Length: 267
Image 1 (cartoon, rainbow, N blue to C red):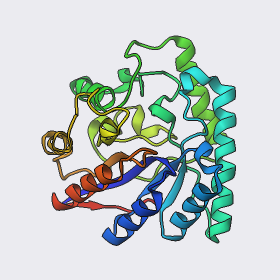
Image 2 (image 1 turned 90 degrees about the vertical axis):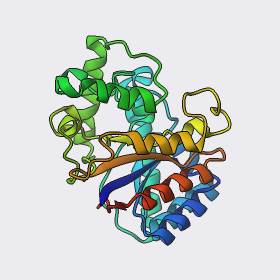
Image 3 (image 1 turned 45 degrees about the horizontal axis):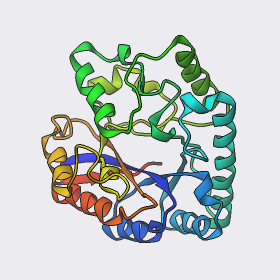
Image 4 (image 1 turned 180 degrees about the horizontal axis):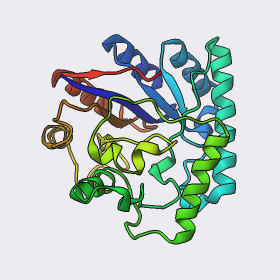
């Protein structure tokens, strides 16, 4: 049996209630990384309160979904705190204790642009796979090596997250060597080990990227050499998009279940 942690970015959306009910009905635990700007609208805020009540863990995806390498330290740190205040208010209204502070950066831009992690920390035999993991599954604007200033920004953000009480996503069953032996293992913000690329089929993106059909995304699942290994769990990235992505995302989750994946809880 395959094991995985399900992480879902960009909540809340028009479909969050349906997505939450789908996950609960399937017995699939998950964490939603929420955008603060979306939570400002009361009906969306209420969806997150409801999701908490149904057992979904809530993490921080910043406020305006800005890239850290563009926004800079001051703006991004302020946006994270603004969103965290909304998250903690939602937990209070749900009558539930906040499990921990978790963070995933928008676009996975942790301060170094398209270099999601320091690729020099990845064992050489796995570097090509890790490059493809990020550059194939994300909307990356540049794959050039970042400047020393951007490396410093990444480091500053990591130290700041620690100082604000954010914690690593608890995914102890992930043991891929390119994860445990690289920067990914020590990152305070949430990483992933497989992107569903579901966002490529949303109306504003469909046809513009290399995955064009649901069949393409299922084939991606079937052919990923590390995803097929059972000796390590996986961190799967999906989306609760503001556009019409519910059917795409739920179809892929059902496909994982059909392929004998067990989804693990995130404490």
